[in-house]
Length: 115
Image (cartoon, rainbow, N blue to C red):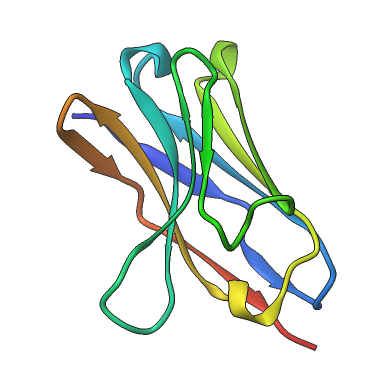
């Protein structure tokens, strides 16, 4: 069974930075794409960023220019560098990995942006 293990969440002040990591239990190149979604209180889970096997990236409009997704295939890990954080970035961040239409989710890591 595929597992995704996230780390790197926490509390940060507005304008600060955090880096999230997500390690996959199988070869990361097996996935069509990997990435991050987030969920603030409420029913909707929002796209943050994804990166596909060809290194093409896709970002949600609210994080463009502030967040950067990258991957280290040798470590089976995807990263999310978050800069210029805002209070509205506060959410649980979930790692996601997709093979065709099958999605696997991590357990989530809390990011809180507050002074």
